[in-house]
Length: 249
Image (cartoon, rainbow, N blue to C red):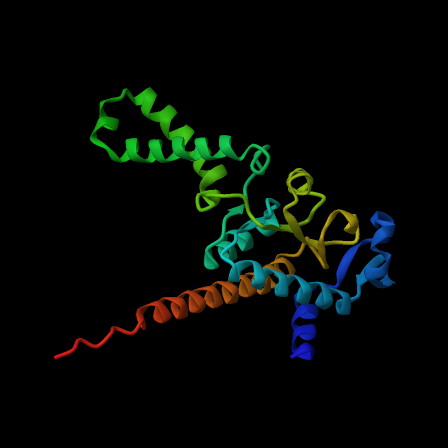
C-alpha cells in the first residue's frame, strides 16, 4: 500500500518544492535533495505527515466535530470545494473574510442576510422592485454567495482546519492559532512549519498535487463520519432492544 501511495504522490508531483533561493530553513528536515536549483521534498516525510493528519481527521469526524477546508489560491479552489462538499464539511475557496473564526457571530448574521436575499429573489415581491434595485440586490447576492456559501454548514466553530499554502492563508492560520483550532496544512519549502500543528510537506502549487492530498484527507473525514453513523446506529438499536416484561394471563 505504501509503495502504491509513494508512486501516486510522485506522479502527482508532490515532491517538487520551490526554488532553493526561496526556501525557509525550517523546512530543512523535509527536504531530500536539490536538483537544478529546485528543492526536492522527501516523500517519506510527506507520507508521515499525511498518515498523522488522516488519523487525526478520522477521529475528529467520528466525534461529529467540524473540519474547515481552506484554499483560496487558483490551483486549490476547485479541489477544496469538491472534496469538502463530498465529505459534508465547510470550506473557504474564494476569499478569507477577516473574522471568519474570531468574529463568528458576525459571519453567522451575514449568512442570515444571504438566506434572506435568496428568499427575496425567489419571491414575487422581487419583480416589484425597480431594475436598478434588482441589479443591486443581485450583485449583493452574488458577492455574498461567493464568500459565504461554503461556510453555511458551519453552525459552530470547527475542531480543526485543513489549509493549502499557509503563506497564502496566513490570516486564516492566525485566527485558528488564536482560538486553539488545530491546523493541518499542505506546506511547501518556502513556509514555516512551526506555525502548523500537523504539517504535510508537499507541492502546494500543482493542481494534481493539491487534489491528491486534499482528496486523501477528505477520505479520512468520510471514514470518520461513517464510523460516527455506525456508532449512532448501534446506540439506537440497543435502546430499541429494551425487554418488555411479560403480562400474566
